[in-house]
Length: 254
Length: 63
Image: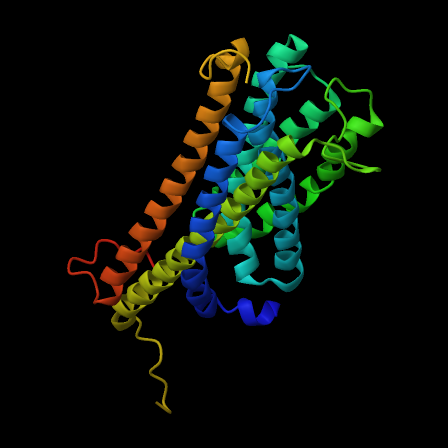
């Protein structure tokens, strides 16, 4: 299956077919989610209307973490099998994941101020999420910090893989340490622990954000594959232009 | 819903910026990605149609 998709030309063809329906579905789900989040869901008995921040904060946080896991898988594929498409996927995912990590921090801060009385506290969940964001930024910088893009691929993949160690810390920080941030409240051991009236907008937004991520990664991978093709074409043209100046292959058996 | 819709129960200053910044971030990245894909496709088309006339946009060949 991976081999089938790993052919860049085939991937671009599949991406062309997939992108539009995924993007339309993502937009639709987010719009329905917004309707429920802002109009058709109740305020919380304790947090009042600030609970509506959850409908953007939680999906952004899920995507920041899951996006990093997906990036880590790509990094592993690239380091072990050296497949260029894994590198392309890693590069495509990093900015999208970074955006979600940043949005998690910003919306969390805007939720923290009215509920905790502080924009920021150095608690385990917030700090590990900030570190996740820094990993994203460092991977992007490393991947693009070389004169030829391919030179940054391996260091970026290695760094991405190191950052995977931070993922369980983000996830379980609320259980391992006594944090100001609340523990997992969507699914607990007893099942779903949130009222259906609040679960509905959250599920729509979660589905919409996931599909947005997929659509954007497809689009960015396609753009990067075309960029690679442009670079190789330019190199080939440059070599062809340089050929007449090379008088070496004129041995006696020529 | 408590209070007016836009006042968001007195928390408008926190809730609306959350939604606005999320929307701006997501729309901006989607637009930038779409723009990049479109520009690259146009560059590739131009390149595949023939070698550049002035030869200025070819990098130095290595090796």
